[in-house]
Every structure is written in C-alpha cells, then in structure tokens.
Length: 50
Image (cartoon, rainbow, N blue to C red; front, side, top):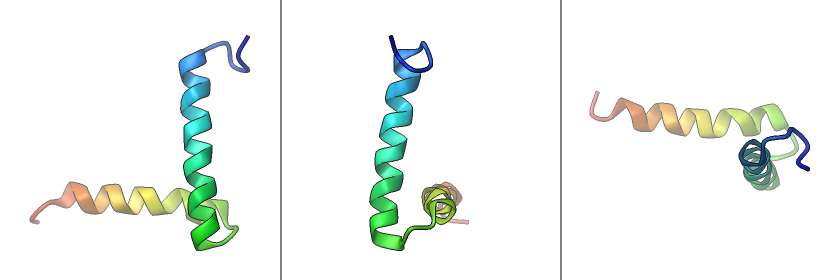
C-alpha cells in the first residue's frame, strides 16, 4: 500500500522531491529556494512576449 493511499499522488511527490533534490545540489541546501526556482521559470515562460 502506498503512503497516502493514492499511488499517482505518491509518484508525483517522489518525482517532485527528486527534482527539488537536484535543484538543491546546484543551488545549495535551501529547500525553500529550490521551490521558488521552478515557480520563477514557469512564471517567466507564462509571460510570453509581454
């Protein structure tokens, strides 16, 4: 049985944690900063030609 009871949710959490760990390896051990990096990228991509 999965930790949350939802296999797809557990897989998403696992993937997210892997990405955050990779970002922390490059940016330093600040997990909060690691969360902000993909958000900043997505926000920039969402702006398009504005």
